Length: 87
Image (tube, rainbow, N blue to C red):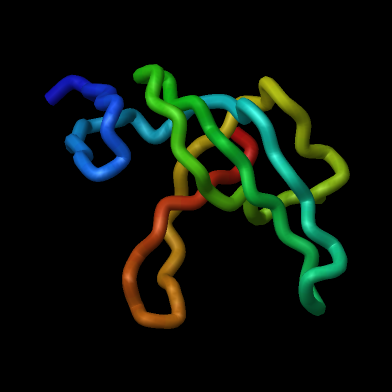
């Protein structure tokens, strides 16, 4: 199924994606807790943007336009969440 964008924040549609894309924008938080982390908007190769975490890398090397690939990490509740790593 191809990715479909909708204008409504209350509706969503699913799609199959390759799991690769590039960083559109990001923010590194170093003061909010004991462990620094990166939140980013990633533009998937299919054109859809999603908010996610960039993990398993040196935060000082992250940059806009950097290629990334999806990995799934279990949340504290046991649900697998898509996150991205440089790739």
